[in-house]
Image (cartoon, rainbow, N blue to C red):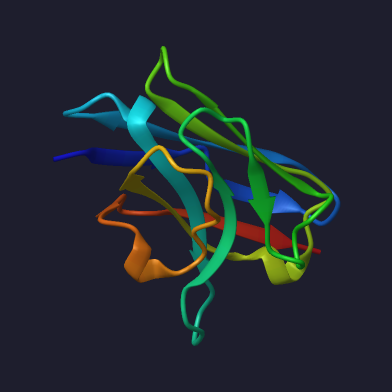
Length: 126
């Protein structure tokens, strides 16, 4: 079992930046692909960013590409999401997720991830 805890959310103005962290415990995540998802009020949870087990490949939804950057530090058992140029529509609860596997496939669907954090709120205001 992998336990995931997100942190770093908060209130930020449009154009600002936030860095989310996802700390894992229970197992080392070095053999896990990691993903970030978000859920805005009244909407379904959607994929935001993903990173392969080694960190060698990252991928993003079109809505955040060029503004958000995912990274990982396997030595610290932590994954990060750097969010820049934040927009009002980025307001959501952000979740990190883990999937065991050392392939290089892109994993963008919720069902592909077995472990989830409790989420952290990001609110972007004007």
